[in-house]
Image 1 (cartoon, rainbow, N blue to C red):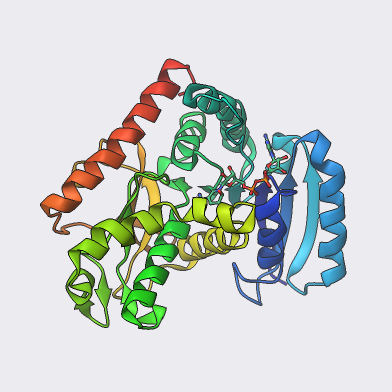
Image 2 (tube, rainbow, N blue to C red; image 1 turned 60 degrees about the horizontal axis):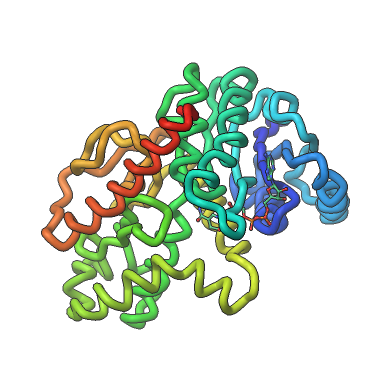
Amino acid sequence: STTPVKVAVTGAAGQIGYSLLFRIASGSLFGPDTPVELRLLEITPALKALEGVVMELDDCAFPTLAGVQIGDDARTVFDGVNHALLVGARPRGPGMERGDLLEANGGIFAPQGKALNDVAADDIRITVTGNPANTNALIAMSNAPDIPTERFSALTRLDHNRAISQLSAKLGVPVTEIKKMTIWGNHSATQYPDLFNAEVGGRNAAEAVGDQDWLANTFIPTVAKRGAAIIEARGASSAASAASATVDHARTWAQGTAEGDWVSMAVRSDGSYGVQEGIISSFPVTVTDGQWSIVQGLEINEFSRTRIDATVAELVEERDAVKALGLI
Ligand code: NAX
């Protein structure tokens, strides 16, 4: 029989966890023939709730679920893991300044980075969903000197999927017709969803839309503020869609991108497209044999340049803030 893939999920008793664990356990990540072992990390007060979630996982009798371990100690839970999905994070509380938020998350992602550095499997791949996702990934990466930097990523696939969905609705075409979508920069309201390099049915997406006002004043803000719209409507932040995007991201990383298409992933910048080297920023990437590479040679027009520069400037500020706090 095949050795199970060990997948760690942090914040496993949270909202996203409640959707994500069942998707992974049922084979959405590695397919019906690959057993998975779940390693679930939570804070001590949430362990009892997590035990309840594990009871439900048991009750599904998933053929692909080879085992579940839970705990509140990162070194134990991350031991030998192949994938780490870092979902648990500290949300912004009332009156919390950005510096406080970054510091609180540094208290989570620095020790988790160190633990992964020491105990994860050699082929470890790390995806940060917990916000502020890009900078949390930077903190974890900076605290894991023995793990190659290209094994760290942050999730912008939800934004990517939202952009595809909005474009599909606008043009009345199936999502499968849309290729080469790109989210640039930060997973925040400054992100830039780029239609100038996207394609619809083989045609340039910005041209197919043919409506610059919609692109600038409806499409971009709708995608960038979708999280707030979900909270407004549902009374809770996006969870099932965030879990689905996390699965998409990790599956693409493991299985590769389709010919003639790419995905958005926030990864360590090598300076491509004028994005400051060393920050974790979203790019168009292709994936082959478990290795991502940033798509090169795309044309960046004036409109795109201004928006990419703005979201990158925000990431540089976040980087400077966590540097000043001694977290990286
Ligand atoms: P919840 O508050 O429901 O769950 C978070 C869980 O993390 C809690 O159970 C908490 O006990 C746990 N946790 C906190 N500190 C921990 C630690 N040090 N180790 C292990 N677990 C810890 O939040 P949920 O709705 O599940 O969202 C989780 C994170 O995803 C948040 O930071 C959220 O902002 C972020 N999101 C990111 C998205 C993205 O596209 N990148 C979209 C969805 C979501 O907003």
